[in-house]
Image (tube, rainbow, N blue to C red; front, top):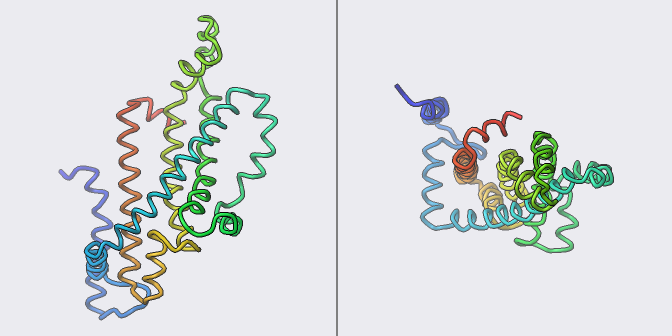
Length: 254
């Protein structure tokens, strides 16, 4: 029998085959869509001249740097808010006022302050990545079994030992789920910034192909971005299960 993972590819592959047959039979000529065979040929061309590899490097640099910066800030704030209830109450209004602001809405300010390039994109990505990690890490700490805290008090652990030996290990599976979520957000926001204004990376490649009336190349870039996102999520899922085992499933279920 076919493994479940392979079965998941059956429907999209069948759809591509049907679309290819229809496109060839109808003699498709369009400025917005292209048959799968033309998309594959355009992707092969982009790999051959190295343009898509350079664009991928630029996008991933911005996405991963923004994820690292935003993740550290979000984790630090989430831990502080989850541990210190007074701080949580003091910061509640401020956080809930800033959190709904779309990261893309900061583009004009970031462009004036930082100009085009990596720095502006990294700042926007970092802003977007702060919130899921902050919220989920705060919730993870709030959901820690109270008896664990009682045990730490019975053992007379200091605040630092309590955080390092009890709180963080107990919350880590759910914090990793937040990191997985933020990784996807980082890629989405990086590409969106490039499409909107920043002339580097995969987003800029999409816009260049669109302006050149190359739907095959434009869709090839889109497919490549989807493949990167799939591989990134799959890798983080495997790492999560290897690191946390059954606790990873519990972290996702909560």
